[in-house]
Length: 465
Image (cartoon, rainbow, N blue to C red; front, side, top):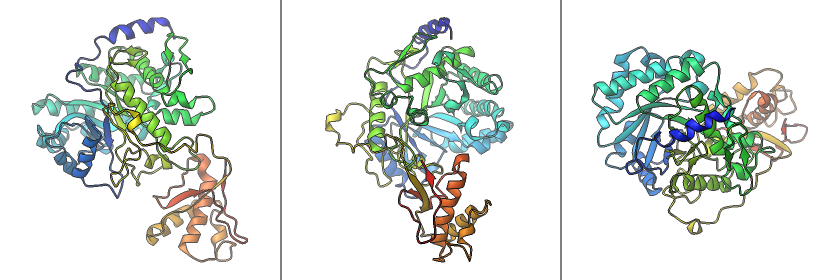
């Protein structure tokens, strides 16, 4: 795109952040997810948050036990209105008032609630029937805060990168045509009027892992020494993928008429583990990304991005814990800075003050290249026979002969056990439906393996990479 976009972006960087560095810390916060059955109690978790030198914490609800545990700490807190309440709140001020009165007001001022996010990645995770209700719901929540005399709480909503129609080069970025005018423009108008932030989830891991042959890994990890990308439209030079992604959103915002809108990184991070078919998800890369990100945002003078040099970039790292009940690919359950028992997955200091020489050595990465070979999907947990039987029934109900070999006269009927039948069904289902988005998860009952579970004349279907 044209060079004229560069000038207003650079000029606006001087005044786009009204909160001074004296009152607003650039140190990252941490997202405190709870999709797990083995996490420590809230008070212990809050103690772990402070031990990592977090300055703020983001919740995905308004859990009262956690909000009580956060009392009398210096942590700034972000709470969230559930996605499924947006539709009703958008047209019901009484419901909005009740939500704020129940989930925010009782905890102030001892718990420093500073942000309310109305929903989580609404454009990505809900149908378009919900989208037009998002901004009205945000207005209702803001009105509720005002009516209660609560002045210090900003209202926003988190967006993923898929709100963009195109993102490369950054100067050519624009919001999707289906949401730009009906959703994004009124949202930006609201955020601008209320002096709030555009909350953005930015994951270089997913961008890189979708095309590792074309995107340099060091460029994605803030490690590139001689890899740069020049935007032909703006002339800006990028040394890392994160800045490139963030600036794409800045340019998209600019095109809708809001050049001074500040971005708040609502989520970023790198998975410390994943499935066999997920490249680059390992402890070494996770530690490298997170440590380098912390260096970037805490460096003085503030670095910002090429389109917004010198600006403070407030942020949350995802996530506090590895969460064993998150659905989807294995990476979803491996974004934590900590294991559920409180031990560190890798050493990290959110203040950026600890020299890396004081951190423990990292294990060498073993999956920075794509896995080549066969993978099977088998039972990982068989402690719940009822759940396993239900998962087996689901896999077999999809048709196309998925479970024919485990019928009474099939080659894989024996041994006649739910465990063996489920392992075969999981592999057969996954091999058949992976191309249309199926995962080897089955509510935590399945796992990938490179060891062939076939026996005798029973051959388990596999995915070949």
